[in-house]
Image (cartoon, rainbow, N blue to C red):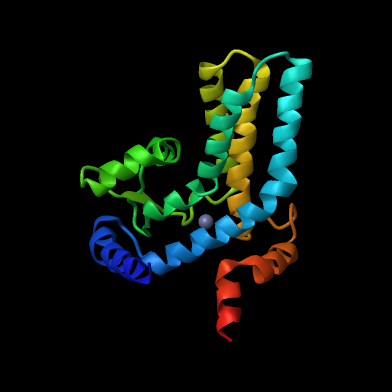
Length: 210
Ligand SMILES: [Zn+2]
């Protein structure tokens, strides 16, 4: 396991980071993913699960419709949205006049897996932005929500099913921002810090070593 990790780390740093316009190394990404997963576990029981139960009950008693299929898709989108904001590390920060068009940047947000495939394949030019961390803000949460609302309207007719997709998508996206410490008034920084200190796999591993 440790060996595989090392190999993957070297592979990432030497091969992939040459292709993607990045100052990000494997260890940094690995640690960040761990932090986000840690918070996810904590928040799942307290926030996501109650919504899931309410959604199923509303489906059965209020709308008399089977909501399980849309729930599975919404949960996948939720998980995906937890990591989506970090795709903005694919944008090069430039002080000069080069800046990618807004629709190119949001294409990365909406169709990240496809765009990343083209970047790795060498067929996509790098993105340029003047503002770093382009997706790390409330505005992007809203834009992501609107996109998912449109997607939901294409997939379903029932309002309850259309609503669940943007709700979970925006929730997942916001969770990421909370961890990154961008949303201070919604959930206090202290709470996040307290949680990370006690539950983070990184800290507990460090503590185990001491
Ligand atoms: Zn982030």
